[in-house]
Length: 297
Image (cartoon, rainbow, N blue to C red; front, side):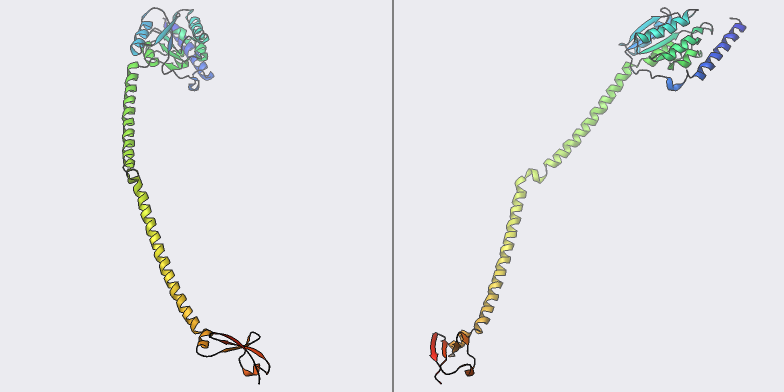
């Protein structure tokens, strides 16, 4: 390519790149995440050549169960840009893949030009399926790289990016399983120790012993209460006897026994002779009974 033609292409490349960047086609916020483990990998590339072979070899080596769906398109020439854009549209409309690899081998700026076309850039931007751009060599940059959700330096690298290493994942799963097993065993061991500690407690090994202890305590309380009651009863009896003795000493009956008598008139106690007159009927109370009398003088 002549230097003037190269300069014109580069100017056109820079202008379109700046215009699309200002429009927001390169914004990171618009980029979609690449599926962690896509079931179907769509490839837009030439059906012949090293590119598709490299993608197949790397993909099957990393994940033998992967399914690659190739939609052949021209990657060079005047019709290439339209074919690529239509291929992206077809993949989306028919939902042919979980992720798309847009791939081409290295070449000159002119060779890679279809991937710098605006129609391709807008098709990538409007794609609902995530797209990985793998165009040219590591040092080659196209507008497709900036618009795509992820750029890979080579087609082989793109196959590595979209295909998880199944063997590495298996190792991680095995490691996690082993960690889970160890953790579970530790938890079981701790639970067993707790169980043994609980089951060895006296309340479980000798369940009736506590009940018997409570019975003994209750018997002790009863005996204490009985002792207190007996002491209180004895004190009350002694106190009662003392009071009865005092009351008996003051009783009028004691006076009567010593030979005295009580004179009553109309059920009233006569204390002096002035309270009586001739003809009064009185009642004399002795220690052994009562007698009636009349005052005669």
